[in-house]
Amino acid sequence: MLRDATRVDADAVALLVLHELERRQLRRLRRVSKEQLSQMLFVGYHQPAFRYGYPQARVYQNQGVAVGVAYGYPAAVEATLDNRWANLFARQQLTPPQQDVVTPRALPDEWYLDLLTVRNRSKGKTYQQKWFDEWLLGDAIHRARLSGAPVIGMDVRPGSALASLATEFGFVATARRRLDRQTYYHLRLKLTPQIN
Image (cartoon, rainbow, N blue to C red):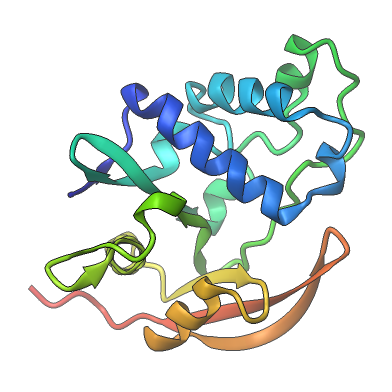
């Protein structure tokens, strides 16, 4: 079942985001232990203006547990989100980075899909003949349409499962980017207006 994330999902969602950020190997988080990062994400999840706070999240719930999460928002919202994480670093008694932990990535005309991940035990499982990540990506496209944005965008690593899935949905690579010293492709999908 797809639904908006709630405060109750904090443990499950923080763990999903933790694993995804570990995969991304963000330079600003290199000196942060897994336990510290986990605590920062848990605390940040409860803050509405945090990049990975619950208001920006949709979860896929299976048997009462959030097994997948998608974070997305219109490009204009990205500027209002906390990308420095200064108060979270301070709570861990760590020196906050001088630059954004996650650099702004959305193009001005986009609804941006920042993160989409499903826990490992739930990968390969389906509901009504759709994978959980298919449900989440379809939901993100629907939310982007409802926002009125003409385009949905995302950044993916070449050859990743998300890149393959996005291609199946019709996303097209429009640029190659270097984000945190890694190569990503910026994918975009033009949205047709919602017909009622």
